[in-house]
Image (cartoon, rainbow, N blue to C red; front, side, top):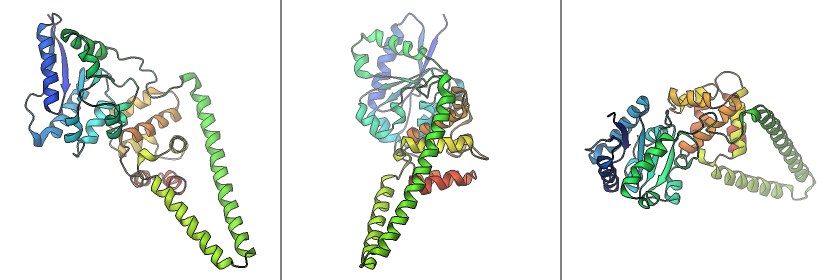
Length: 322
């Protein structure tokens, strides 16, 4: 009888190993020939290195994968240099035969650590241990196997609008972005003109003008402190950045994805997920925000300059940060 191999990616925590033992017990009793494959010996000082090695190997093999998300996972892995690589693999799994099992964490804890793990697309599915515990011991493994096979619709995993509407969406976003740029420019010119008139007409123009500069500086500083990381980028700025990357000269979102460490397979999945280039660009920027939200906005500016997209870097510096 042919065996069904289920690979388990874990960080070696007690809760992880306890859950794996439950699955192994169920697999041994199963008549379906299920076999679990996982790293059995993980030392504390190499858990992140072991996880990234296993994750990349399994993604390359397109093997069915169960990822155990636990408190230990966050406590041990989130402080290491391999964190981002692990997150990229488990949230953009090539074959989409991937299930995240939340062991002893809730929505709030996961949301605080990684918005990428909260995504609702077809690259992975998730189930909480509380739901599994409500099933009979032998049925828990069957439930996970069912989720592993439910790869879903692959045609459009990262967007909520149908393909037929993508061209109209592209035009609509373009018109909106042009209107936003025009309004921003007009508002800045009006503010400059108003400040100049106030300076000339006031008998105490030196004091007033000094106060205006001080207040304007405080306002600018307040806005700048509000946008520090990729997680702080607004949806309107995402659309503008994506629009510029999809239409501008030279390098586009694919080169920027490479600069941020996205592998070729993930980039290819993004290319295949949408018919319109703008939709692909939007999907990339949203995925970047979700998977690397803690990265500083200045890093995005630097990488845009590295791929010679000075126009995008300038927009971020002048409109997102100011």
